[in-house]
Amino acid sequence: MNSLIKLEKVWKIYDLGKIKLEVIKNVSFEILKGDFVIILGPSGSGKSTLLHLLSCLDTPTKGKIFLEKNDVSTLSENELAEIRGKKIGFVFQQFNLLGHLTALENVIIPTLFQGTPQEKRERRAKEILASVGLEERMNHKPSELSGGEKQRVAIARALINDPEIIVADEPTGNVGSKTGNHIMETLKELNEKEGRTIIVVTHDRELQHFGKKIIKIKDGEIDE
Amino acid sequence: MNREYIKIAIRNLKNRSLRSSLSILGIIIGVFLVVSLVSLAQGITEGIQQQLDMIGGDLIMVMPGEGFDITSIIGGAQLKDREIEAIARARGVRTVLESPWGVESVRSEDQSKNTLLWGIDYGEGIPVLESLMGLEAEKGSLPRPGRREVVVGNLIPQDIFSDLRVGDQLTISGRRFTVSGILRSLGSRQDDLSIMMDLSDYREVTGSREGTQAAIVQIESGFNVDSVAENIRMELEEVGRRRRGEEEASYSVITADAAVDIANNIMNILQLAVLAFASIAVFVGAIGIMNSMYTAVRERTKEIGVLKAIGAKRKDISTIFLIESGIIGLIGGIIGIILGIAAAKIGEYFLIDAHPLVYIQAHISFSLIFFTLLFSFLIGCLAGFFPARQAAKKDPVEALMYE
Image (cartoon, rainbow over all chains, first blue to last red):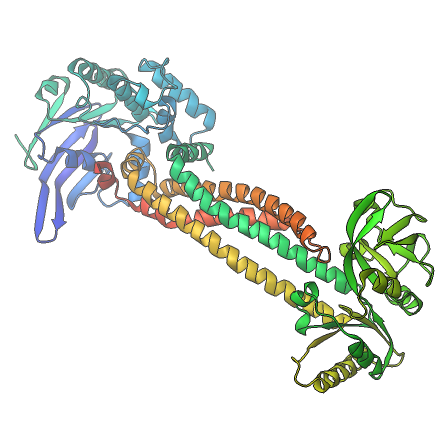
């Protein structure tokens, strides 16, 4: 078994003074290399928090998270940033592209933090944009792109550092169902052809069939 | 340093162009004041220094007014005959030369221009000036008394009466004078732009019977400069005491060494005052940058979250913001320097017209420009430091969820 991410009795508790808000309660599971995981849950179920923990954006209050057998639950912010930059690609519901930069520049950004050489950065960004069908739209700003195109730019940005894991937070939430399906197909392709591990968080049950593994979450707990 | 960071920073600044321009304007005003005022102040002090450098080691200058203040030079304070006599009485004084100056309209052929005239008694004065101040004719010869001859500073043929030659005639207050020679540079621009004439001729053309803004004293050999200066001071005080009831006059009795000290003092005070004043303006500009950067950090919270999610470390985030504020400082600095130089040049032009005696040449040194530029960039970075740190410290999850 090729364990990639493993959660052991993970808790995330927010201390709001008088109240302690338990968002994730004693969650344990494992994600294998090459998995396509759908984390399904209604809004407020804690699925986004779970995604933040899985993707090294946040650390648990209690419990341990292992990434390739390394405990990442106690790493510093900068160490986590290093891991995110190298191993994890993010796709957000709101696309979160930088509005004043072109599609190409947006895709290049993650390479800046990795010290990739200039020529390589641009060549690779162009290749990836072409592979998601945007070679004609590279020099357009996000405001000139459709929702589907923006999400494809975001996917290209997630891929630029060649990460092992792609995490997508409601990737179909802001596009129509046809485009949504297309995005999911793209992710599926990345999983099947390139062997990348995909983790998608969604409330949309329709997307279940894309996943090899479904984790249902409700009130911060795994809903078996 | 990543070229891309600079590109991103410039895009961000363009994105909020109004606020960026306003922050830049704040720095422009500060830098503008630093460059224009400091270069003019340096110019003024250099002009004074040049004047004082001319005083030879065994010469003493006597002027009305205390502490060699610039107002009494520009203003009309003068030493009268009884004061000149008092100076002559002092022990160790060999010669007292009245050295008045004034501006008169001077005509050469069909050109008429306001020019600085300098009166000196040819008979007594020329030998003294020759030996102690290196007075020398570059062309022609030094003038002789009683022949209505004048000598002109070496910049007169260049800047005032073009192609003026030895032997030409100048008309001053209806009287004609012959140019006997053109002087070798005396080291100060305003002296080189003046016409030297015999004291009696000077009195005649200006209509002033007595009075001089300065007296040049040559000491007897074997006397110590400082003790003679002290003797002169005492004699002048005596004159002051006898004129009881009048406002007490004060005098500056300056030896060459003292003159240099005074000039240095003036230079330091003037520049410090100017620098302090201009620094306040730069400081206000820096607050403007800081304000703009804090707003930018708050507005871009979500963007910071995204950048952190895709691998930006604290250092990366702070670098992006620091470059932005540094660019604001730098652009403000560049524009401020250009405007400052322009203003100094314009100021120079008007100040020359305002008073031909005080020749002010703005001194724009490479180091002034270099340090101002460096300073404005650093001010920008410094003003951006706290906002950038705030941005870098943002929690990635909170920043990402920020709406």
